[in-house]
Image 1 (cartoon, rainbow over the protein chains, first blue to last red):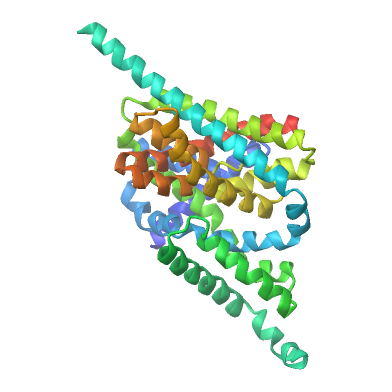
Image 2 (image 1 turned 30 degrees about the vertical axis):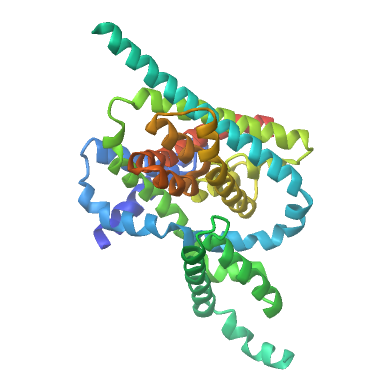
Length: 120
Length: 236
């Protein structure tokens, strides 16, 4: 547990440091995630070192959002005033994202299947 | 009644009570969600719906609540970092598909950000609202830090992320069927990159491969969106 916490905080810290270097262009936590992934992938650190802690905190992640979510009470006015905008923007964007991602991925797979057949 | 409230206020605005309240309402939320299986009844949403009126009645303001429960908010950072491990665990799923996955999520991310910003602009939204909407497709902790960085309100973003997840979770499978998607990878990828964990929960119902790919898509979408938002900020 302590080892895992140390590693997670270490990568968080490294991420924050990197974020500072690039003037906060990307949040430190996201950079920490990328660094951790790369170090695991290139076997710089062992997966067992972070497995326990990483599993526990990601499995129970949703509860960490509560304080920020309650902050919605501060924006209740803006939220209800702009409800139509919010719903429209989210609906259009979500549908477009689903279609784009699915079609591109499937066209890649189809093309590869065709190439395979042509080879045979 | 008011006298009593005055007397117990120091106690009910303590860290102990407020943290207990968060955990308790969240647990209740998990129970209700599991019992009813209604996508709309997310534990986070239930917890918020109980805590907000409670704070109003008890006369505890948001800064106090936020200060007392800051340990939970702090944990958002480490949990994003920990996603790096989750991503690593799923790496086996994508052998041979790396380029197609990165390409489709990258373009999906561009389309997602541009469309949400444009529609909001057409409706006359201000910068605060647009900046809070832009990262709505990614997992909450990443979305919240992106929102904060670009001048949005993390609390609003948290709400938008949930709305987006619920909407995508409901409509996603319908759209994928409508446009005739057969590939399991394409289905999982579309669900995870459009609607994060809620989309992944639905993808799990389609199958194990779809679920795992969807989980992977959450991480990739988070990274892509983090890289793209600073450029999109010019449009806000």
